[in-house]
Length: 392
Image (cartoon, rainbow, N blue to C red):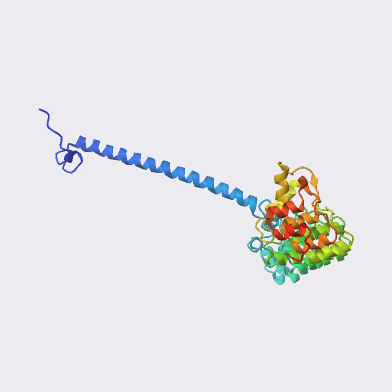
C-alpha cells in the first residue's frame, strides 16, 4: 500500500530523507516561484514608471503652455535668456569671455591682441562685448569697443550686445553701445526692435537714449508684454506697470500714435497715461490694438501667472469662447473700455466713460465691456457701465 504523504514534510519542515534529485526539483520550484514574483514586481514597476513619465510629460506640457518664456509668442524670450545667461559667459572656456563677464577690464585688455581677439565667439556665437554688456560693466564695454569689438556682431539667435544690455536692464550701457556703432533699430531674437523691448521692460532711461539716437516711434504696434516679469529688480506687477507707463509717456511726447498709447494705458490700468493719450488726440473708442488672434493667445499664456489682471484679460478669453472657434486668423480691434473692464481697471473706466466712451462698443466676437464685467463678477464695473459714474 502506498505510504501517506506527510504535509509537514512536503512543506519542508522535516525532510531529512529527501533524495538529491528531489532536493534539486524543490529548489527549481522555489526558483521558479521567486522568478514569477519578481517578474510580477517588475511589470508593476515598469507600469508605474511609464505612468509617472506620462504624468510628468503632461505637467511639462501644461507648464510650457502657462509659464512665461516657454512659448510666449515673443519667441526670443527664452532664447535671449539662455544666450545671455551670465553663468554661461562666466564659465566659458575662453579666458577673455570670462573676464568680460566678470567686468575685469584690465584682464580683458591683457587677453585681447587686436580686433580678432576682441571678436572671438563661443559655440553659441557669444562675444566678449555681448558678455560684458550682459554683465553690466561700463569700463569693460568701453575697453572692448576701443580694442575693436564689433557692436553689430550677433549670436546664433541673432542677438546683439545692445539686446544683451537691455535684457539685463543695464541702461547705462545703451548710449555707449550706440555711440560705439550699435544699430539702435536692429532686432534680436525678439520679434521687436530695441525701442519696444525697452518699453516692455519699463526702462525709461533706455527709451530716452534710443529717442536721442533718432529711433522712430510712429510704427509701434501690439500689446505691451509681460517681459519685465522677474526682471529689473523683480518688482511687483503694479510697479512694472508704472515703469512701462513712464516709458510710454516718453514715446507719446515723441510722436507715438495716441490711440496705441491709450490702448496700452487701458491694459496697464494707468489713468494718467490714458488722460495724456486723450489729450494728445486719441478718441475714447479707438480700438487701436489690432492683434492677430494667435498673438493674443500667446500673450494670454505670457500673462497668466501675474496677479495684476487675473491672468489673460477676461475680455480676451471671453471673446475666444464667444467666437466658438480660435481667433488665430485675421486681426481684430479691442476698444479701450472693453480692455479696462476685462482687467478690472476701474479708474481708467471712469476716465473713459466721462470722456464719452460707448459702453456698447464691441470687440472681437461682439463682446462688450458689460460682458467682461459680468464674466469677472465685478460689481463696481457693472455699476459704472450702468451709468453710475462713481469713483471706485
